[in-house]
Image (cartoon, rainbow, N blue to C red; front, side, top):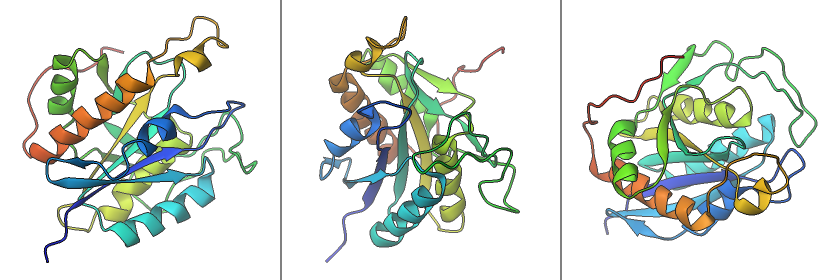
Amino acid sequence: MTRTPRILLTGFDPFGGETVNPSWEAVSALHGRRVAGHRIVARQLPTEFAASLKALRRSLREERPAIVLGVGQAGGRSRLSLERVAINVNDARIPDNAGAQPVDEPVVAGGPAAYFSTLPIKAMLAALREEGLPAEISNTAGTYVCNHIAYAMAHYTARQRGVRTGFVHIPFLPDQAVTHAHAPSMSLEDVRRGLLVALRTAARVRTDARLTAGAIS
């Protein structure tokens, strides 16, 4: 019997004093959904540098996904941010949930300086905008646990033929934003809908669209 290809979709637990993490709230609701012939498997990762890598490796080994998409909270951003690149640097402004605060340390010692997303981020961007969802291409995933995982996803699957990876940052939920002055937010319904649109596009599109989505600064 042919195995349905898997999409590994990851989110994080709350961090930085928050009581909820919108990434896991959105991702967990999509567990078991089927999209474009793929089955979504949702996994929560701890917001910890060391433990997140162990959990990611375990999930990759168990699920053997065709697509891996990480999702993380980026308070202050107003759009669904499709990350273009992950860099081999951990430089934590705040400690992780285990109290670790690496400074100028590599994600993977001796690894490449960076990995580009292998998902069709421009096509995903166009599809999100067609659905009326605010979205953008981001050229920095930061240097905290989100970038850490985005880099690790690419590194761990680099030699696995056909596996494609990427990362999306999402805004605060409205209930979070009320405690942060002037912070933008996005409804959980829109985040979930956006992830489905992005995943459907990723599963169907192999050759990315060519459209302008760069930044001057």
